[in-house]
Length: 425
Image (cartoon, rainbow, N blue to C red; front, side, top):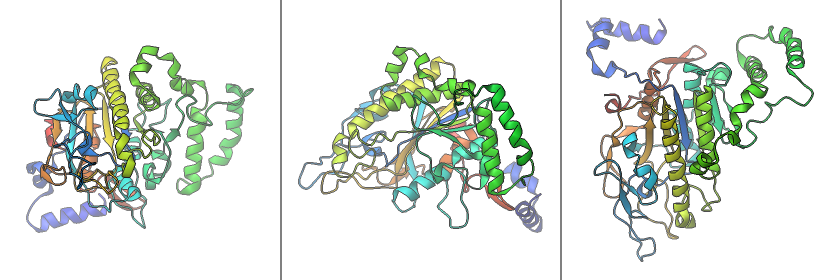
């Protein structure tokens, strides 16, 4: 029993209650447990405009004077009755019954990219004393890889501290790549170094590494080195050979971002537990998802590319028999207001925006939560970032209230987050 549980149970006993009764009789203590085995986390860096994508409202006009607030595009029907998407998401609209757009996500973090990115990745605000682990790192540490021959957590994009293991250290770390054609750097052996020679080199390191204490930076370095040596070689690198997929399938996924999503599917098949895929092709519309000023004018190019890749991923996983086992989560740091700025773009909005879950064996609703006529205020079923994290963890069979330890300090996996119960009923 740790200190926190001792104090909690002592307080209950003082009040004349028993911990057993408190936990058994209160629905708040019942944590649903999903059956998903993997998670593909698609990151739309910059701040996806919910009112122009998955939560459309009445059309506005950025060219009017004064400018009229509202959606940039017309809306279309989806596979879920009464639910609409923007006109540039037709393929995803046909699959709306296999997903839940959470339209009532909100946070109170200052609408600045780095702070909000950290919050959506870790579920907590930046702290001066603690570096919190990302959701991918927690999943990796709690579940491990589904196959011992691959890492538990892979990042297709650029690494930073928000995506990292924080106080979990090496057991929650990731392997990353930025080029889908070549795969991760440094895992292919140099010419002339065969398996036998690599084994001899490793045996020379072993005596030095056994003297390292099981904590601190040197220990983390040792663990990372062991992991790199274990993965080095053709058995791991074969998973990045996208050329083995049919030309028709690769075309279905579309361009470079689609190929990242196809690679994510291959990594799921290989046993990787958590894969983050960044959609950071900022030059398609000039600004990426950060649609200030003129970036708004070509935002439809980004939305179309997302539509192609997301729908292809859902369909492909379904054909492979992996959709119920693989949770697709779409993340972004905040949304966009309905009003336009002076040059026809949109600012930042954390009070109400949309994130998405698909597959993973959940009881999908099409959408959850409702916003007002300008997608600015939440009208029904608000969902916090810790709630969103708790839902992902629960879908993967992880208790979101379990305590991790930063040294001797207990830190719950989520900051009081509760899974969306309706998705598990």
